[in-house]
Length: 501
Image 1 (cartoon, one colour):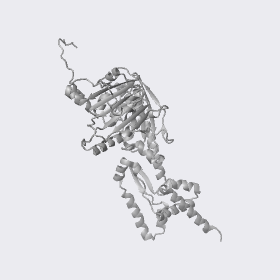
Image 2 (spheres, helix red, strand yellow):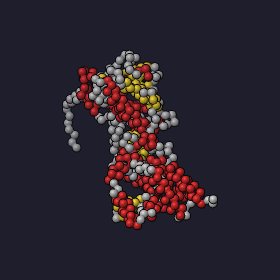
Image 3 (cartoon, rainbow, N blue to C red):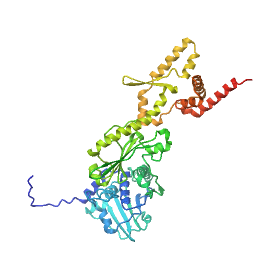
Image 4 (spheres, one colour):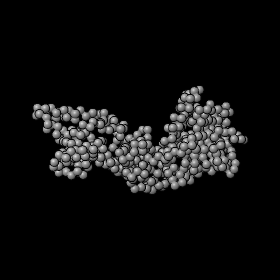
């Protein structure tokens, strides 16, 4: 290509007021903005990070204070410069930074006044970006106050560390700038929603032998492990390593326990507000920091049967360009070179997740267990049909006059043909764990128990086998304590009838 001759140049320095306002709209949410500030604290070696909010005063603020190594004034001014570090420059492995924009763009997305106070080697320095001041002067100049003692939350700084203070929270008021109570309610709700995000994004730092401690208004946040590794029922596959020129990619797949094997609180905590259906998929970590989660990168669809499948992917910061990590560190794209390996991982882990569900489902339609329903698969279709040979039905029909017996079985067939498939499918797709069997009264349960017990006993099954068979099918499974009590009473009554006078 022929080179164009250049004889003149013109100054194209961007207008400070215009560009700095543009930095506000990169796309940060409150949780991604606070996470970006915490990244800087982690990189600075902090072991304790405090998030302090003041929402009820006339001048509300959010402060993030760490006990990291701190900065000198020259270092602080450099950190306050937009684009303070070239993303092409090689970073150390623990460095969670990316473009040198995070501190500024994350802060401006939430507030119009950013103050940073840092303490290092016994010296305290401060710098302020005030967007109203920039708009007035149109200069790339930060304010450097001589005395930081009057800055809110500065008293939380220790011998070393950094305070990031957000004031003029115009993006967080919800339009209630003049209503202090409503404004505080909106900000507090946003902060509460941010808590879970922080527990998840930094959970691996919080789980280390020397854990990172993140406090929200004095309360320590608990790490949220999306793989439930402490549960004995979690299935963890061996870790794989993909060696590439820019760095190694570590991959490990997990199959979460069935929700019946976890406490309701733990199950809901791991699933989050959107539930497990939206939480399945890949969890991408960059330097142990969670970047992206709840996606299959277009390699497969989210489904009810695979919602227990989660895959951890670890990449180094040397692969940022390959994965197209964005400024917010909240999105990424799958490199073609990794795609084929992940396809194989998906096939394997999906099979494990399906086995967890299907194994439990097979018990409920196993003919040996005298289920209420039969699962019939034929001609590419699956049907569920009431089992008219179930002891509860058969025993009742036996006592009916022959002219009523046919009508009784017709009613049962109608129940099976009227199964609300579309409604069940919609409920299963939304919140399968909330679907539970209907409760039956004592008389109904007792009738079913006695009929089933009689048939299994006459078939020569011993009591241990009978209990095992009944425990896995409804209505006995969902009312097992009452079922055991009725079985015991039935056996006791029969023993009395058989015992000699």
